Length: 150
Image 1 (cartoon, helix red, strand yellow):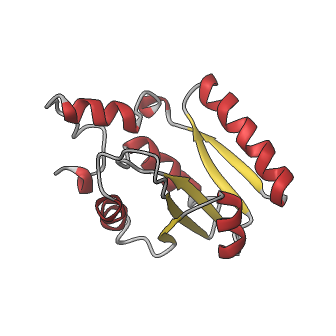
Image 2 (spheres, helix red, strand yellow):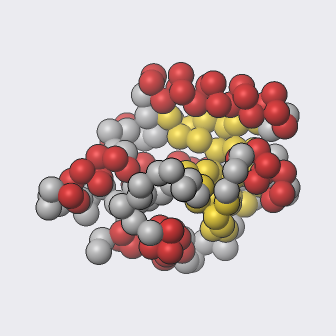
């Protein structure tokens, strides 16, 4: 079984994330959406809300599992017997940042990171942009799956 971990804070999940996950299902038998918990980070949505957004969004997809974790992503991958990390790239800055992490992860645990380019119509969407639109009472519904529309 080809199992991948797609790590993130998903604060909240966006249509960009959704795009990568859906396309990732063509490559992997199972994808674990791994919500990283970082005590130093301030989140707009609680861990329970973020997990519920993912569960509702992928309720009809049995090949998607949703879990939370603390610590290194490579340790979580080892625990879950995942051979791959799935990541999305929106732009060259994402690539440079993700490349350094992928090299480090490969050095630590010999795990492969698979990059997918976000579809062109969604490459501008980020969780931070969505949070800013929400904070300023803008219409964020075109940027997120239905489950996030609170």
